[in-house]
Structure formats: C-alpha cells, structure tokens
View (tube, rainbow, N blue to C red):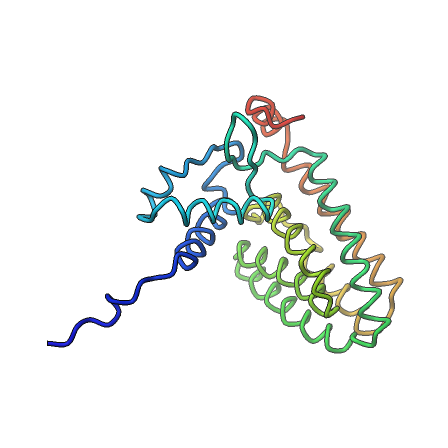
Length: 236
C-alpha cells in the first residue's frame, strides 16, 4: 500500500506564518479586528491551529507593515489612527508618489506606466458600476502600487509598501455613501496626464486626489470614533 506522499512532507513554518499573516491582514483591513483590539499569541495559535512560532512571525510582519502596534504593558494591538496619523500617512504618500511621477515621465516610462494604470482604472469603473466598493478599494490600492512599481526602483517600492498598508488601515472597506463622485475620474486623470508626459498636470491631479481623500477620511472619523479613540488611549 502506497503512503500518502503529502502527509510525509512537513509544511514549512514560513507557509503557516504567511497564511496567518494574510488572514490577520484581511481581518484588520476589513474591520473584523477593531481599532484598539489586543491580540494574544496563544488565542491566535488556537484559532488557526498552529504553534505560537508562526503567529509570532505573522504579528511581527504586520507590525512592520504598520497594521499592528507593539507597546509596553499593552502588547500587540490594532492601531487607533488619529487625524494626525492620517495627515502623516498622506504626507508620506504624496512625497513618494510625486517622486514616482517625476521619475516615470523623466525616464520615458510613461507609456508602459499608463498601460498598467489603465487596467486598474478600468477595474475600478466596472466595480463602481456594480456597487462593489470593496473591489473599488482594492483596485485603488493596486493603481497606486503599480504607479510606484513603474519607476523600477526597489527602494521606493519597499518604502511604499508600508505606507499603502497603513492607507488600507485608514480606509477599511469603502462604502457607496463615502465614495466621492470623482474618485474613479481622479485616477483616470492621473493616468492620462502620465501618458501625455505632463508632469505638472499629473502632480496637480495627484495632490487634489490626496487632499480629497484626507477630507473624506477626516469626515469618516466623526465624533464617535474620536471618542472611542480617547477611551482606548489612542489619541496621544
């Protein structure tokens, strides 16, 4: 009788850590794990049916991404972002993505960049038409990730990977009520200006897009979330 080959091959610990990381990331971004919630290695290990090692690795990865925080006497928690955090995140994003736009146009990468960006804008348009706001949010993040990737700069991409994760923490799941009427059009305009090699136009559209996003996120917070943040010790 032949043995089951799969049962004799140990699954690498890194695979377990990656699976736990992915599931925790989705739970944080989608609001299943709420801001201020404390995470326990023991409880998570039991929930996922793994040892504490992969869970510890997953938590460290998410701390590096900015999706979790480790604080003395509190352990690992889901961050409660203040208005100052939101402003700081978008300050960093504007700096990184503006540098990306300048480099892409100056190095004659506009056509290839536009081709990549256009796919994500089209995906946003289709998702918006069906009211799938979670998909709109994913395509939004993929658009900006593709923009930075088009520079070919590994260092710029590494820096951006952290700030885009924190952006997802800001946004959570986009709702139809919160979606700006010009949201998809803003991305289309950025893409078109890059295609035309118009640096000033692309940078102006990018800044307007970020300013509008900050306004939307600030309005989303509202007095109830601010009160909750204070109660959890999130405002510092």
